[in-house]
Image 1 (cartoon, rainbow, N blue to C red):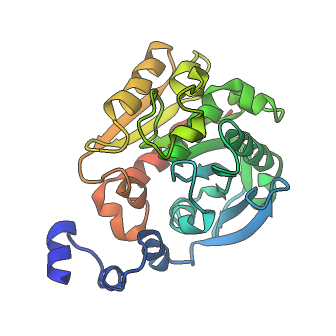
Image 2: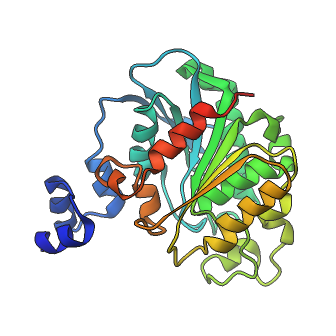
Length: 291
């Protein structure tokens, strides 16, 4: 079995193989192999009154003041996910000197569109107000997400009404990063997603691509070129083209080795060989001017 896995996945560490063979879930595998010597974690900070309105902060252990800040939103079709499963994302960015916030948000069926986006806006507002206490610079604030989390990040960056409700605007963001995000997905085909967006009466304004304007923050869009869940040509490619037409700085990248799920896993130490996603994200953050 180990020989078979190595044949398909390459130079996987022995510990990773043992966790696969033991039946451990993929995200738990990645977190089990994530070192903890690169960050200091402050967990369970409330940004609202609901139990799902909590976040964790990963502060680089060796940190100068005024570090860049990323607020990360995970995927899960807006009906699943937990911040505890994404410690490997916090470690990856913190190990590169980036203060990282991983936020939970309310999910379907507790809420539908746009309430989970309102949670995201609250989490971003909390970050802007408090991240200086964790050596982060609120003037160097980025949003990032994977899959439905990339949708959340894109809507917060592109639809000014969401941040306006918490006393902010997209101009407060230095940029945003989307990994395998759905940005233009009407009519909805996924039966699990349909009720989240009131199918068949899904509002057109729920689509990020409809909110592009010349003043939008710079974007880095990354996708798996053979993503069979979120069409990269229509979503990543289409949004990148629309942003360029509006004069917004954008870079779109496509990688052949990862799939929809493993694109986010490339941030983990065991799977960085799949694609240089972490280096692209860090480079984007380091070379984008602060607000």
